[in-house]
Image (tube, rainbow, N blue to C red; front, side, top):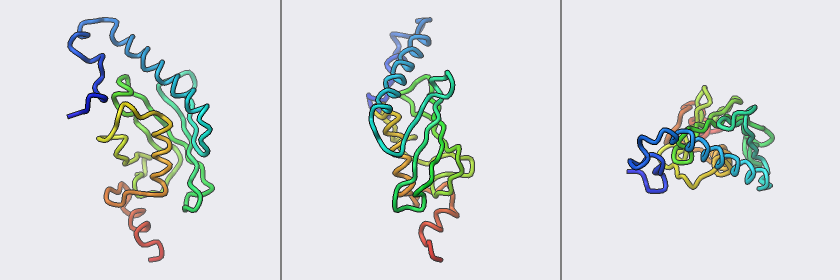
Length: 159
């Protein structure tokens, strides 16, 4: 059962039948994404960024830098962030555009990260997502690999 913070108030029974519901929901998602863009731009976080692709506020291109002291140091990865109409009550779909050999990233760029799936919370934002993916690069979850070859190398880097 989803926690109350992940329940979209526009999906309640009292709003069903309201023909303006989808456009007002889209408007509130747009407003939230515009606020998140401003927050991200003002955050000053090093090694992460994201901006809407062209004029589409619902599809962003992000970048994350590999953390110092990891095999990803000095690398910059490009990602896509696709926001569903139910955002922030539904997680964005995030995937790597840049090739990334990592235990929790498959050959198509899909990412296995709990906060993008069952642990999503409406309180998360783009900044949190980017920082979490960046953290995943240096701290993979080898118990749930999408790329078994990368997981084996991570366990035994010399062997």
